Image (cartoon, rainbow, N blue to C red; front, side, top):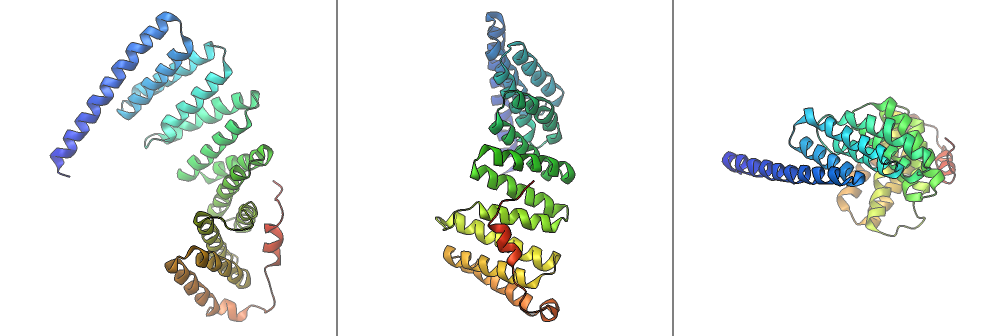
Length: 285
């Protein structure tokens, strides 16, 4: 694309955003005049979102705070909770000032969700906080949020959400070099998967997680026997998937382990009983 085309496209986008902002502000005036608090709160938020897209950062917080204050006046906790989360989403889904989402999620949305006993909303917010802190490399905070999300996921009884929460928790433990905890959490995610692979997507997930476990146990925990077990399980999933490139990569890693001094020096007969025990039981947090 030529530079002139990029500039022209950018101007067209800005013009479109300006028109949308004008329409929302006109609607906002009407909602305020009519005393329609919930619609006015949504309009304040919409305007704040557009100001963010237009990179008018000095106005974003002004409009988002107006949206939340309006929602709080409505005495509808569900509306306030919704707007706190959506205000955080403006930053969470953006590319600038992403850290600003934390205040809306942690200080605003979470206490309201707890008061309303909205467990799934609280879980969703903690998942977002975890993902956000991982992206910002704030791993200590990410650990706090990921642990809370894992606990909540167990309470909700939703296995899919539990899998997501424990996978994120494993990612955080790995980033913090807490490799045994990471291994335990990865095994927990696998225990939440169906006993029989039902789709290529599931086979790919198995292959990737077992590969991560193989690398973790070989390079970080220096356990060649568990590493071999994990890579063999990854290979089995890759064969079911029919991914020849992935199979070749796994075979190469198996060869590297078998040719390593660590393998030659390790005692024979050591098996992955701990791994199998963990994969068949839940973890207490």
